[in-house]
Image (tube, rainbow, N blue to C red):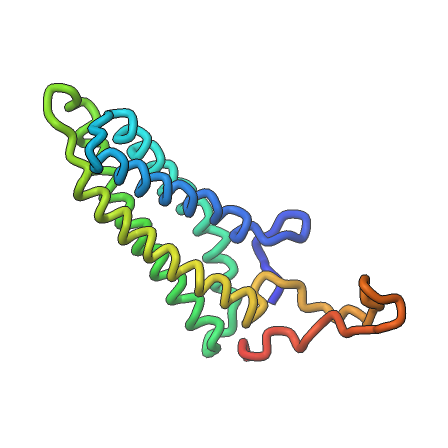
Length: 178
C-alpha cells in the first residue's frame, strides 16, 4: 500500500514520529530526575518544554498518518490495526496535553511555591507505555500489511552477497489488507 502522504517517494508519517516519541521519553526522564530528589527547576522546565514540543510534533505527524489510515481498505485487518494505532496515539496526545497544562500552570510558581511533578510524571509514564504499544502496531502496519511500501513488482535480481544466486525481492503486497 503506497503511502499517499509522501515527499520524494518517502512516507512522511514514519519520518515525523521519531520526534514526539523522543520528546515524550525526555519528558518522563526529566520528571523522574526532578521527582527523585534533585528538586532542580531545570529538570521541571525541560519536562515542560519537551512535553509541549512532543504534543505539537505528534499533531503534525498525525496529519499524514490520518491520510494513510484513510487509504486502507475499510473492512481489512490493516484498517483495524491502523484504527487501534491511531486511538492509542490520540490517547497519548491527550495525556501529554494534560501533563503539559499541569506543568505550565506551575511555570511561574518557582521558587515561591514548591513544584509538583508527580502528576505529570505519572501521566507521562502512562503516555510512554501507550506510545510503545502504538509503535508496535505501527511496525505491524509496515511489516505485515506493507503500509507505506511501494507495491510495484520488482524483477528478480542477483543477491548482493553472491553473484550466482538469484532471489526474489518482492512478496505479494499486503496480503492481509484485502
